[in-house]
Image 1 (cartoon, rainbow, N blue to C red):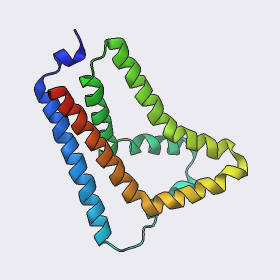
Image 2: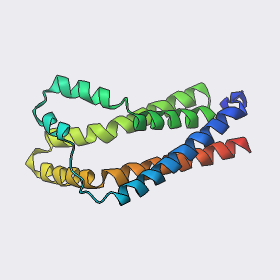
Image 3: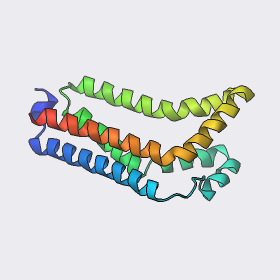
Image 4: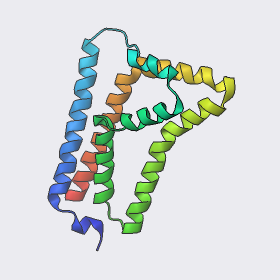
Length: 159
């Protein structure tokens, strides 16, 4: 039997509900940020990270994964993978691919910074400045897109 046959309809309703919450939350956050005309700047605690060693940086990186945004993305991925019509091998492979993509988005930047010598560092620093200035918009857009995907997947699976 496929995974979809074992998934109760309430699981798809939860998928849709989480999707709606993410879309509404992302739109609300964008609207709230537009009402606040203060310039974006990096939080003061990020400046302290410039002097952190490898072990503390690794521990900090692990701790940063236990945040509502990351948990919502992991929950969304789990619901999407769980509601797909995949075998155990297919589901396992999908989880591995999701994990590899999630790790690579951070690891690629770290490796580029460490091994990219001086040519890549100015570009990464400009990108970092851009992200600080636009972090709220990037986060809101990501949350809205993930929410929309959950709504679509949940709706298709309910039909």
